[in-house]
Image (tube, rainbow, N blue to C red; front, side, top):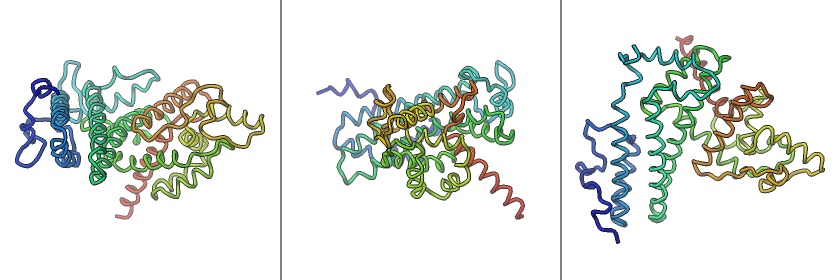
Length: 358
């Protein structure tokens, strides 16, 4: 048994103000949303009642996150004008820089320090939310709703990381309308400032549902077209996703990106597998046989873990960037890129229609 002084670095009671867990001292930077704070106020008393040592560890983790958030908040806002050592910086100069510097290399040194620090904070927060979800699962079936809620918050945080990539990809695409690229640039500044984005709230549940359905369907790797799988998935989605399928699946880039998403292997591996199966006269195989027929290990059967989702997204993202840079056949964007672009187009069309109606 650990002694109290070995783990209790802070007074856990300092986190309580009246009946609430999270200190609302106005001098502290907010790391959790109101929804997340409400969940913490439900969960932490339960953890304390069952495992005081674990509760202390969680309290210390929250304190560490708050310290990180305070450090990030000290950096100049990305949404205001500032006179900095390098010159005057405004949201307009930042968006212009994002659009201008769209070379193929890693742009980390061109991004604001606040964005880089905030991303590290978001990763730490995402892992913490996941830890809360795992612990909540052990509290008994009567608390399943809390565990599920923390799982959803974990996924939303992961999507904030994913959406940053999507915005950077779309901003770098010179073929996109300049008004869209500026809109995405400003949305990216908002994301970096708060690590929260309304688009994430709307799009994340759709993509998460597609990911979940994709795994449950376990498509047979035969024709590799994914038609039946796609129809089954679409029947479970909302109107926006159905519109996306109807309007964009005729685009070869979108359909190829969809195949990569559905089957969990690259466009090049899909072509190779299709040729191999046709040559051998094999009508279809399961996911567990993909590696054998490709002659290399591939993780086609990723689980539902948020880290699997992000990991496989980054593989598709990197492959798409390489094809675009080398002018190779296959999708030059990810399915997420295409879907976000579609959502932006739909929103812009709605705004124009509303303006015209007036």
